[in-house]
Image 1 (cartoon, rainbow, N blue to C red):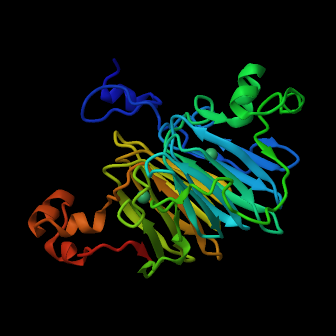
Image 2 (tube, rainbow, N blue to C red):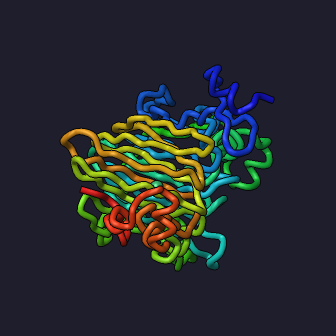
Length: 363
Ligand code: MN
Ligand code: MN
């Protein structure tokens, strides 16, 4: 094991802290989702960021999906993850079957700024019911959601013996032979004339799957604002918190950390520099712009500096339904003057200048 002094002298990639020992450099926390290749088909496209592409992000995965007018993300479910989404452009309709309320299902229409949440395992579909392309961001509360857990109806039926399909779906052999031979995933479709269920026995679900985040009243600060939705405002959403955030030109999101959750950011517009502090002398800065994903591990200190003249707009997911944050300004205000003076080796006059309440976004 290297001693602290020799480590410093030899410019080792490892940092020596209070306890001797090796600390790997901070993991890469930036992923350029919109510039990745992804899947493309006749009905639309999908770009994924899972642990496969972005190893640091074990708790959260995302997909940037586009559907052409009428196109359908086919009936499917996710065995190991709940699905969250934020609509960026267009109008989409989802259907979801809810196993908890008796005989219940939900059909909802979503516009830009709206979010949805489907608990783990609920069967659902997504369709663009507008006349322009729909673009939405999907989030999952498990970084492995894709490779180990997306189940599509065509894949299932294609891998079920014909005689079983015949008995279960009540279809004649000549129709069964025309069914898709493998998963169709995203397919072209027609904008439906009606959203009525095939069965009249079904009741609308009593748990709302939709929340209008963009319409929520914002928490305003001099340098930016937040719209935060937790399980309190959106009860079915019991594994995630999401935030729609704007940072005004020149704004600084102050030094803070989240004791209970990882933070996954997707940039919609504008630019920002994010600096993450990972203890043991480790800090790393990356710059982000539209279509890029940032991941900040639970408990790691961080701040965000807005860059450029256009406000920065981003959506954020935390993998906890409860929002927790500690800001450096509030922390310092909750200590006696002499302790702060001694800790930093500064005068009481200097301590008196320090903020006494949360700054949030500094102008
Ligand atoms: Mn899904
Ligand atoms: Mn944060």
